[in-house]
Picture: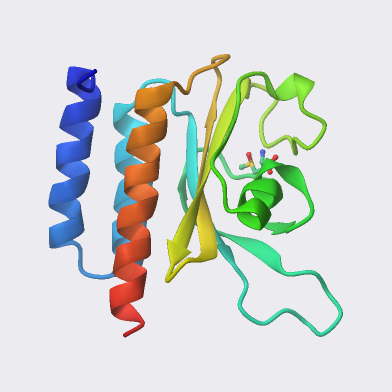
Length: 164
Ligand code: SME
């Protein structure tokens, strides 16, 4: 099935930005802003990046990167916590249609009903993820998944290029 007109339009804009952005970080801010502003049900959009060198015995942490939406209490998330930790540690997209039914869920806003988290890969390794929360239950269908995975993959490609 072809993507809905709005998703196709947003994807075209993302593709344009991927050619035009000054740095990978700029591109990540632009993705967060565009998805947040244009996709009505994407109420919080942000990247978490995996800390490269943890303190010796500490678990590796996901650290909040570019985001749009209300400030979250979760600026650092251990890999063994939250939907975010689960997506990063398994390297798989996770969609939760009803966060109240998922024991892993770490609350960012009491209004959040559903969530999608998509890992970002560089040379086959997870380096971070794109996390989106919605105030609407089951807000993320197949087309949303494809759009968000496309964004995460463009960021991975840019990071790959910029790291030589
Ligand atoms: N809900 C996430 C935490 C991050 S906030 O949603 C921004 C989780 O369960 O990992």
